[in-house]
Image (cartoon, rainbow, N blue to C red):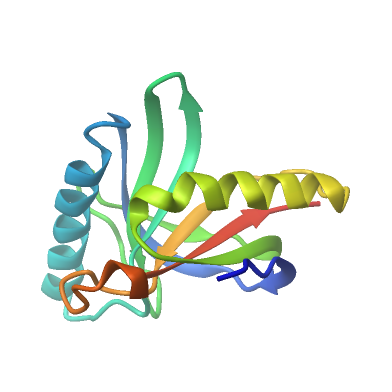
Length: 153
């Protein structure tokens, strides 16, 4: 399947998330636990997520990743402890949808950043992935969709 790159205007989105640091090897296990914790907190608050889980990547340094795992909410909810309220920013983002297993995401990220360079787009903030397909509901990894958003100027 060929990748379709584009830029689009995104609206700000209130979120709840947990920021953490991990190695690449431990990332998927950590993300699952963090999503579960955020989801449980949203439910305890009497709400449901307003969309699918996301991971925002603040930095990658060597084998270490500084990321935020969270979920969008319909309206701002106060965080508690390590669960913090925030928002995904409004603005222009370079986007692409990845179809397939998470192991192949690095190739899609590389293709997106190469496309951004050819378009003269400069990074303008921390990029994020939205996990459109719930792996618990769809066993066929070839059908998994992950949307990537990279703020640009």
